[in-house]
Amino acid sequence: MAGMEVHYRIRWPISLEARFRIQGFTVLLGESGVGKTTLLKALAGLVPAEGRPYGGLPPERRPVGYLPQDLALFPHMTAWENVAFPLAGRNRKARALAFLERVGLEEHAHKRPSQLSGGQKQRVALARALARNPEILLLDEPTSALDPLTKDQVLGELVDLIRREGIPTLAVSHDPTLARMADWLVVMGPGRILQEGPPEEVYSAPKQLLVARLLGYENLLPARVAPGGVEIQGVHLRLPLPPWAQPGEMAWVGIRAEEVIVVRQDRPPPPENILEGVLVSLHPEGLAYRGVFQGSIRLQILLPRHVQARLNLRPGQRLQVVLKPHYLHLMPGEAD
Image 1 (spheres, one colour):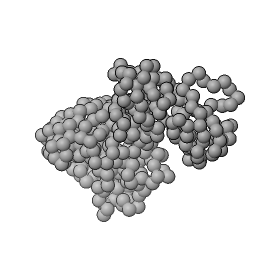
Image 2: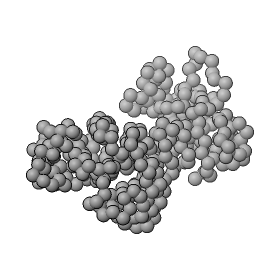
Image 3: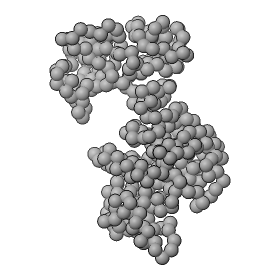
Image 4: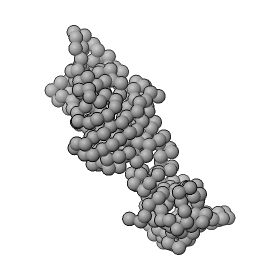
């Protein structure tokens, strides 16, 4: 996939320093207010900033296709007229129709935005951005206006379209759903980049507590480093220790709810990291069951439907869970 390096310094409206890679479909993930949209506007030339690429160029001279959060479609224009707006020449309509065909909307060319779905509006805005022949596409919170029932499908179609175009793309979002679709994931904290890499690496090994929280880790536990592992509320858990972890240091341990494994009574228990306790609650959540386990350590668990069908767990039931060492992730930091 095509890519580029981005380095920007912004002093207004927030203080921000960002250096990261855009590789294929890149998602910049962060909470509201950390500067994601400001960085996007800086790349588009809409806020003052120092940086590369395109530093010093006015917005109209930047080879950038920008899709703002509200998409900025003209309500009184049809789809093809919106796409043709940045084009010049007598063949504007034919070129606009060709761009709509590229995004699969040629049949809706004469409809106004009010007659289109959220996903269709996004594709009109994408066709208009492509009409500028951009070197890079910028998407601001592309999930914000989508129907939750169809969000995953619409996003998947949008990302597929962008990948077919082969244009490096930066999408900013607070939604982990979009982050999981990325070729490259960048996690942003207040005014700075916290971590970047392939999504599977960032998800499996967040480098700090804030990254783990943004990625949806349900179980984040304050711990003290001990030889061969950690101590959490008097329980020793074995796990691989990174070089920075020295005995006695405070740290955090993260494990996802779906990686807390319930021990089957008809099988021999694993040799380590077993906890005994009570299933406090259990309720269906989509195609899974979410529960709370209370032992020496309180944990959220998430069971696939077929596992719950086999185990037939009930609230109040005593059980054992195992925390496999390779699912436990250690991060530096004091307790909140």
